[in-house]
Image (tube, rainbow, N blue to C red; front, side, top):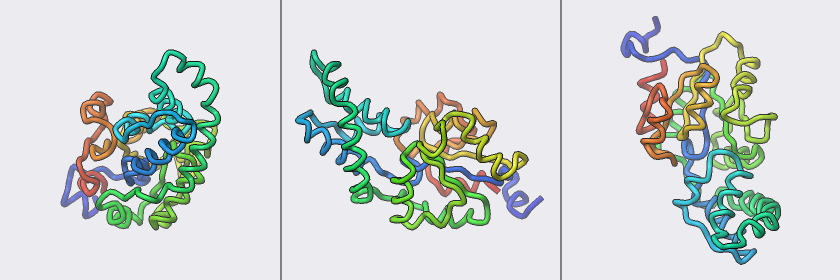
Length: 232
């Protein structure tokens, strides 16, 4: 038994710590909302709120843009307008967000410290955000050096919560290694559950607490430093 487990007997021995990005390590909603509203404005569509956008994120950019555009098109001919403009709006949003993804986004308190604390472990990032934008943000916020692997929403044929994501991780690092996944949404909890990994739900992100509780994670934490109480 290592020293951590003697001091904190309920902690789990984990070899690989996997993190979600948006809503877990970084609050990116301000930049996402601004880019979305700039895009909608260019097509003379109504804007959406940050509160709207927190409910739209988590499943990748295409579905997020679909949700935002449908919310903006509150009219009798919204279906026709959606079909006409969706691809244009999606393409334009990607450009604008890529240019402004680090304007107002901020790391949550304690993120660099916890990544440094666990820097002797294998740490990976699994997000449904586009890989190129994620890499740009990791470099900007000086987090890229902490991760042994980064998987974006377009890095593999499938995205979270598909079991193949964690299967890829285990094939790469060893199927015998223990894994946990930390994230702020039911998608993240499902990602861990689908892979038989420990699920840790982050209450500081974008999902309401009742939604996370219903997804039945192994742990719910209010601050990221609480990972030290779970992971040996």
